Image (cartoon, rainbow, N blue to C red; front, side):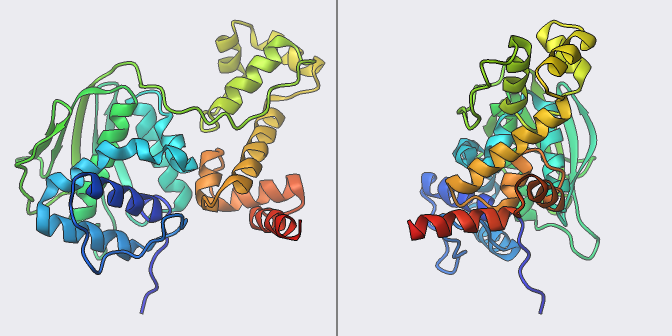
Length: 323
């Protein structure tokens, strides 16, 4: 028998979000629903699917799509905070795809097209292992909710085959009378009006830059640490600071810094604080700190600290217990 699949995007974080949303909608959860503990960093794919399918059968697609209206509840998980920091629609789609690559999801969302005003997405798996239609509705709703936080207004979502899609979100509101469709529930057409994103809660995890550094270096550190999913190049960072790349590089050299070293130090500092501050999963922390996958996170963290992330967290707990 195949063991349950652990998936930190569509596992515990999503199950908790679903449970919170259903409580807000005054939907009673099934007696034999998922047993995810409130602070557990993991849940099985089976848990998520069983809960979504039970609610779809009893309450229809609207209840699942409305899970996206609660996405701000994800802000206190590193993974959720990283998604909620998206600056616009294309940035949100890129972050979601990056997360799927990080966790090597078995049901990726294929981006058929994306622009400043819309996207065509295809949630799929292998022919013998397609995603559950119920989970399709949940994920489509969550992406719509994240797009709204990223400043996208007048959001519309149509689900289903090319010749007869079903509009399930219109002008940003879930269509309560939406009925389940028979096929291609993973094909999503999204359109929106670009706008200014709503500011999310600030994590403020990073230390204040050394005041002995030059102002350009201090500002660069603040920009890099402010969002570790942004991959800054020297020219892009220089433009943001109103300087030439050569001038900024000279400032870095005078302060004994490099952009690569600055970014890696920021990643390790953030990861260390997150490992010490709560029960978030290693996958969630590694993704939020801008690593490409769990192996990359572990290698970089061990090189910097002499310990794996798990060893670092356990040693801190042991020290606290002994103290």
